[in-house]
Length: 351
Image (cartoon, rainbow, N blue to C red; front, side, top):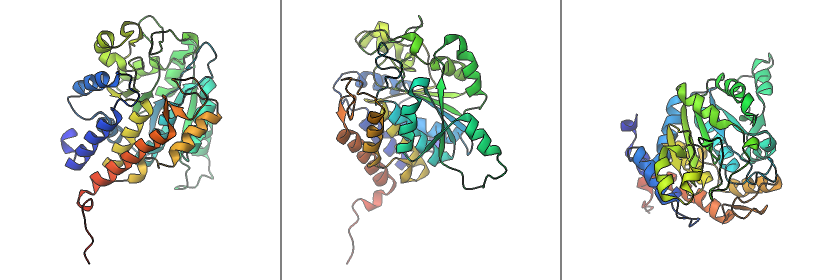
């Protein structure tokens, strides 16, 4: 599969990875995490590999699972969402739909469904439920070719005793790929940790790790997107997390994924996958527009989501302002546009 990638797509993939792995938050983690993730992937660009897998495995009408959310201040309540994660999940849902006409299934804590609904609407998608989707699909009045760009949003259980039942509900849909974005990963003791080593409240966390564990066992391709070493999928680089990150022994999760995408901000990892989907399909519009970035952050803030670093309900993502987030999107658009049309970069109009 990888040998069939064009030179332009590979160049785009390399540039995208370089951008999303710049340590903009100056935490000192991403270089270590990214380089180890790249090594595990045989040196192939991470975002490009993720996009390839989504495209090669998915056709119209199939389901792609995108999981995100977590109680960012668990002791305050399960509804306390952060801006990093839901935004990337919404834009990746949109990109997956545009690239493959798949049906995105977005998972989060039940208490955070309203945040994901708002983010999806900010991208132009219509959030719905399994019940509404199934009824619409079976309706005798359905007009072929006039379907909505929808995303199913599902509040996954936080009750460990009910986790397997929810897993079967999702796996029965035969998802082609499952992506986890900025979700604290469970460790071998059943605990979840913040990046600084503190324990979250396990009873409030949706048991999505179990879904990824079962899905991978059954042959579903799984992708983890993270930025701090404590997210679902970081078990792939667990030894490096233990040895080189502060509190590494505490925070390292236990569930591995098929591919780990390490980015300086998890949302940016999603944007990188979008950019590569745009490059591989030749459709620039697959990558969300720059002007949508402010709409997305505003949507999160209106629903009470906070900056994960400061805790303030403000238009920042991991202490980076909207202007930076929009700038990343703009640079990715330039990379895709120039990479797909290299001859036009230095083209001079002839008079």
